[in-house]
Length: 174
Image (cartoon, rainbow, N blue to C red):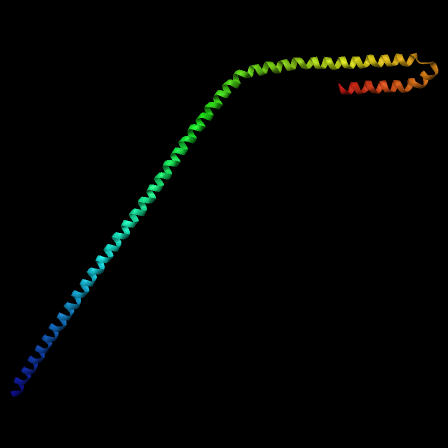
């Protein structure tokens, strides 16, 4: 049975070797894990710093943009208020102009009535001109009759035609 004792010793040695290997591997894993954890912590800290700096710059940019927008809105508001005031003045001016025009409108109507009254007077003047032309034609006829008999015969026909044409033209003008 000497074989049994040797076998137990061999197994014991193998277990001891396995224990040592496990201890070595576990310490190596622990060391590697610790290093990895430290690296991860450093990466997280640097990422955090980067994020903080980016957030701060973004806040500044947003603050500047908001300030610019506020200024633009303030100037636009002032301009709009000025425009509203100008439009109100124009509307008020138009209302007063309408009131003044309404007061002056009757005066214009009387002027129109006077013009209408004057229009018949112009017609009368035109009638007087026609009467004067007729008188001149009659005078012209008398002058033609006073001429010697021989020349009067030759001149009467054209003179009458001219007088008739003038009368027709005057009638058409009316």
